[in-house]
Length: 166
Image 1 (tube, rainbow, N blue to C red):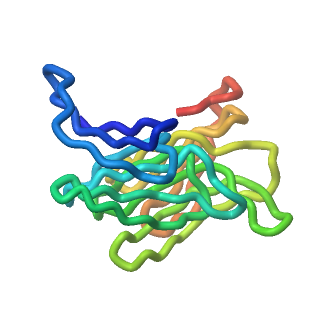
Image 2 (tube, helix red, strand yellow; image 1 turned 90 degrees about the vertical axis):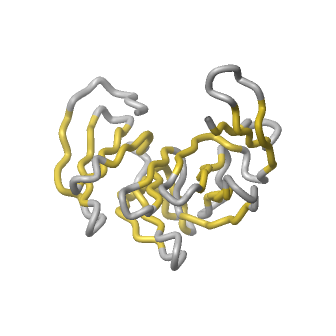
């Protein structure tokens, strides 16, 4: 089991039966959410994004080497079958603010985003179904279906209540 500690920046591998710490390292992005990819990397989205940049940390679970990537939004995090990293959350570009769903290709560092301008909603938790869709909760009570391939909105379902987070 891999976990991150937001306040201290500690990242820990725990024994799932005993809770014993098996390995540990540190990251500088205040761990908030995490996901494991198929390559043995633990990905951490930071709890605090600066204006326009959210910092993702990739921890190699063998060497404990940490690599950082910048993405436009961060709150929720998931990984698809191609080991692309998905995040959701708020963004800010200059004076423009809104919510986004972002796909990061870890091999190229390229991000592709679906964005909605304005502060009426806040994209929160997300999950990848690995059959073509990414599902995102927003604080307006909607569930968004985003295409895994094109990173475009497929459908928006109002399921309520407001303030859905995951």
